[in-house]
Every structure is written in structure tokens, then in C-alpha cells.
Image 1 (cartoon, rainbow, N blue to C red):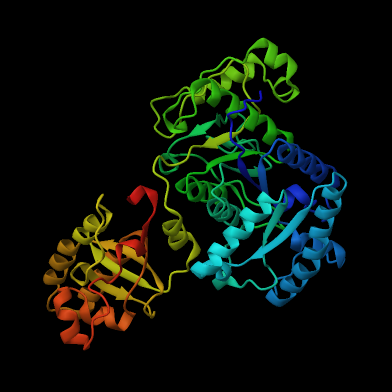
Image 2 (cartoon, rainbow, N blue to C red):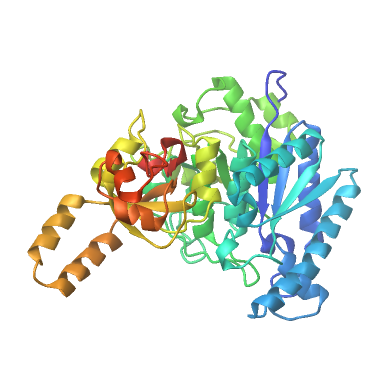
Length: 471
């Protein structure tokens, strides 16, 4: 299984609260945490860099303070998180200490990476810790986080961490062994989906909710997968109660990528047969081989090549069941990833379809005032805003139709703007007040109207970032 030309990987493992603590008693799942530690240390000793994104600070605090359930008052929750975070990192440190593996604690809020310099500092710290052989343990800083600066859930945080670290794999550990066509708890005939090439074309039941002490669910995992794959990170959902699956899946994928050549994973159809000597000698593969009957039921989904969101993945000796989301063929540049996912939007700039085409073509242009239809919110220059596309022709015709009726015109305008498509973010060169004055005009008119001209662009092309489906 070892090939001297294989490069070490960077792997991010996200663990939800239910993977670490009992949902009812809030007691730590020591046995499962120990298995996770053994798996991570095994990966480290093979030369891979591993980052853990760990939830459970609040659950640990509830147990430590003997509080039966999560309170609603924000300050109380934050105080509980402060107590629990001490216990959580101490427990991780003690478990890793048994195998002589150092760990580090990193607590983040969205504010910590909103500044470009701080974002780069955080990324450099992660890289240096991995270079030193340390396991970074990342969590949201629940003690300081409020709604305005929260990542929302640790699935999102793990995807941002994976993008920040230029990771190869993101493992989203959960209480099911992958993504299914329907909720397997409700429908026993639900079929697993092994490989996803286009998240936007998935049609699945994602009604699986998070635990009572967590914030996640399958919906947040799909959002995280879309975010991570846009940064070029292969994202995998698998069962958290069997942490050894991580090691087995990685060995499986690396082996067959080696056999087929280390090329673009999106363009490959994995159709391998594990040699009998390898299957017999390698416990990670041997212990996870499923029966032919189970494989046949899986193949009924994964061989459906007619569906663009599912890629065929046929093997005679498959790895542990999981769902793998393949990375985008043209991943986002680091700066654009930071703009899109690291910055909070302070308002909205509405642009017309012509401007949208101009700023998303191969030789991207900057956003000019002429392409701006309207602006919403109050923001300053150098702040991030959302970009929403509006069909100017449809808007003009609708306003003409209700020319004499101010209320009707306002209602139609509001409806059209509500239906606009959010396509990305921009760091703007002008404030909301200034943009409202110069929108629709030529760049040459900016100085005469404002008395100055900091830039001919509302946003320079280097400060425009779009979701992959809009590029």
C-alpha cells in the first residue's frame, strides 16, 4: 500500500457533539474519542497532516456544571461554553498524550478571519503546527460568538478550515454512513449515494436533524461539502462511530488513484479490483469489505451514469460505506475563497445581466457603475457586499407598466429584487451612499458628481468572488 512517490495528505476531520458526548447524559464518549485518537495518530505516523474540528464545548459544560439541558439565554450558554471548552481540550490532550502526540487549541469566530492579514495568520499558524507534527484542534469560540460573527455550525467552520489549510480531504463524521436518496430512518428502501459530482443537481431527503446539543444536520453537511469542494477539497461523509473508516477510505482511494495515475479525480471512474494478496494482508481493507449482496444494492445507485450528480464507482471489494463529494474542476483561488466565505456581507449591490456576464467571463472585468441597478443597506468603502443579478429590461418594462401608480411600481420593483439571484460577493471601492449616486453612470462621470474618483470600478476584478456554479 505504500508508494514512495505518494505525497503526504492534509486531512480535516469534523466531529459533531453527538460523536463526542452522549446526547442525554452529556457524558463524554471516551471509547469513541479513543478510537478517533488512534486513527489520527496512525495517519500522523504515516506522514499525513491532520486537523480536528471538534464540537461539544457546550455539552461538556452542561455536564461539568450538572445542568440538564441547554438554556436559552445567550450569556448563560456562553458561560457554559467557557467551562466546557476547558474540559474538552483537556480531555483531547490527555487522550493524545497517551500516544505521545502533541495537540494545539485554535478558537475562531468569523471576525477573526474577516481581516485578510488575520486570515493569513490563521492559515500560516495551521501550516506551521502541521509542519511541527502537532494536531490542531479547532472550534468556534462560543464564549465570544454572537449571531453576527458566528460561522453558524462547525460543518461550515470545518469547510472554511479545510479551504484555509488547502486540505486534500474533509471528513464530515456523522451518525449515518453517508448520503441516501431518502431518510434511511424513515424508509428502509433508501439507497446510498457513493459519489457526488454536482451537489446542485442532487435530489435527496435531507430531513435528518442535528442532536439536541448540536446545531448540525444533513443540510449543513451539504452546505459544507459545496463550500469545501469549491476550494478543491474532496469531502466525505461517513459514520462517526467507526473512526477507523477514515484510514481505510484514504488507503483505498490512494491505492486506486496510484493504479490509474494521479490525475483529475473528477474525470476518473473508479473500477478497481483489489488484489487478493493486498485484501488478505491489509486489515483496514479486509475488515471493511462488504458482501456481494450489499454491493449489488449500492451499485443500483452508483452505476446510474445518467444522473449527473452521481458517478459510477464499482469495485469487487469496496471500502467502508461513505459518500464522496468530488472537488470542483476549477477550484477557487485562496483570496476569492476568503472573500466569499470569510467576509460578512454588509449590504447588497444589484447588477444587471450585462455587468454579470462581463465580470464572470474568462478575462474578467471589474464592476463598473454603469452595470449597477440599485443598492441596499448601509456600508462603507472596502467592506464586503452581496452581488445580486437583476434583469434590467424586465425591471424597466415593469416600471413602465405601472408608471402612474407609485405603490404598484414599488411593489413590482420589490418583487423583482426579491427574486434576484445572489451570485457572489465583492469588496467595494465606494460606500452605499456614493454607489447610489453614481450607479448607472459612466466611470468618467464619477469625479464630476462626487468631486473625486478613487477608482473607475465599483469593485476591482481581484475583489470579486463568485460561487462555483456562477463562474
